[in-house]
Each structure stands twice: as structure tokens, then as C-alpha cells.
Length: 143
Image (cartoon, rainbow, N blue to C red; front, side, top):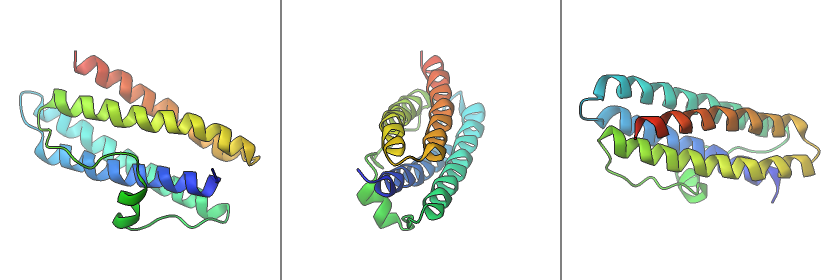
């Protein structure tokens, strides 16, 4: 796979996650409303930063980042579907989605290395570290 295509797939994932996390933020219900409402805002802000970082990286290596919802939906491997409102159901969705992104980023490290792009590989490693921490925390919260 070409590195430019791979980066656009991740850009699409982060854009879709931004919208999903915003939905979770708006519609969360139940006894965990206050802490989770705040946490989902923190996470969609993080997706905004990742989206920008990955798009700017793609531009800096000569690519063209996707910038439309149509492109994001066509490219992301994540689903936009869902009606979760309970923190536990939302947490399980976040675990599933973040885990899928982590797996793809682990593949992406090899793709970046094959393109002699250690900077992009390092960006993937940093993102993996952050997402794995979130996965761990949500696994603790849904027990």
C-alpha cells in the first residue's frame, strides 16, 4: 500500500471518530453522564489534533489529504452507525474503534519504514501509545 493512501485512511478514521465522539458527548445518559461527557469532549479534541497532524504530514510529503465527509465515509474502515447512549455501550464502541485503528497503525509502521519515512513511523508509534492508554482506561470503566 502507498503511504499516501494509508495516511488518508487514517485521516478518514480520525474524522469519523471525531463525529462519533461528538455524538457520544451530546447523547450520553445515565449515572456517569458528567465524567463521560467531559471525557468524550477530550477525545474528540484529540481526534481533531490527530486529523490535523496527519493531514499536515501528508501535505509535507507531497500528498493530498481527504477533506470531505464523502471521502471519509468511503475510506474509513470504521462504522458511523450506532445509537449508544449508556457509558458502558459507548465505552465498548470506543474500545472496538480505537483497537481497529491501533492494529492498522501497527501495519502502517512497516509501510512508513518501507518508504524510508521514520518521521511518519514515529508519528504512528506515538498515536498507538495514546490510543492504547485510552483502550486500557475504557476497559477498566466497562467492567
